[in-house]
Image (cartoon, rainbow, N blue to C red; front, side, top):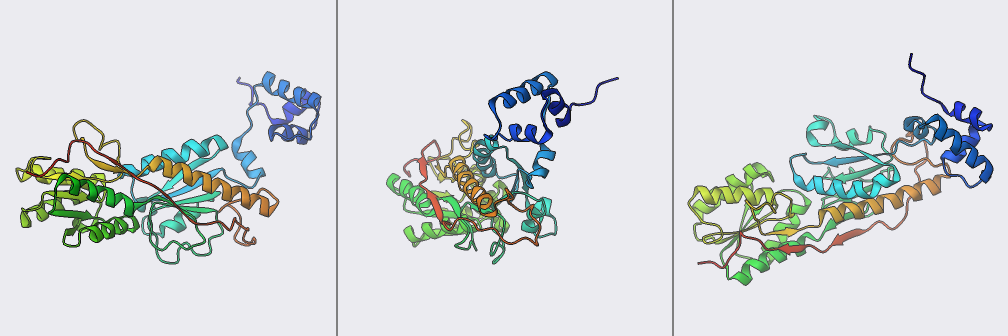
Length: 348
């Protein structure tokens, strides 16, 4: 018969100390003598004891879970942001629960996220007006978003500057008949507004059904190019839309970049593949995720310090007073970079 898993009581008995002293050692307390610490660590090693994370989290009134709200898993931008978040939060013991529009179903996705009992929230999509007002949960918004109150920090790339890089590149190549394939949402609006400011007479076409997918980009580009064959340069709101535009160009018999130049946005791994080789704007999504992690960790620590109990995040009961969080919420905009590849060239 397999022996049962050793408990903290077994460690205390083997080390000749109390259970509470073992807990202090496990939590890295400096209030335990070196002799007792050594005895506890030796007992842990001999017994091959592994503390149960769920029990430790429960005792500390925290879940060590960060809730992340996204639009849809099919967008590779979210993968890069999550990678940046994980690299900087995982060493602190945090893991992630991700909610997207499909997972939320008919429910309010933000309410679904908060119901997870997470210590902190990362909002990586647009939400309804007022949804982020008066949140007690430590929260950071990722990406350019609509309806973000001043009290909530936002970390994003500078979308207006990124659109300017894309348009500037096409103009430097000699293109004068330009179009933009737009998507809805905060980032999409910022990129479209920047395009319109620099190209007042350019064409702005919303992707099919307002989607930022490859299929939406394909349909919008197909209609655009059929109606406006004089266009020689397209700036797409993201890489998936740009790839859809490449498919539309091929269907219409247009060569890229000889007949049509296409620029995307996000610099996803897909854009860098040799087959696609897409000129795009690097929005530094992994850096955005890393910076968001830094901001959120600071807010979690400030919440712990203010509460004096180590309680932090959405897991606290609604009857508790709202914790005081750092009064330094602001926008953090990272400068984007242009990545020139094989889908842009001077017009014929």
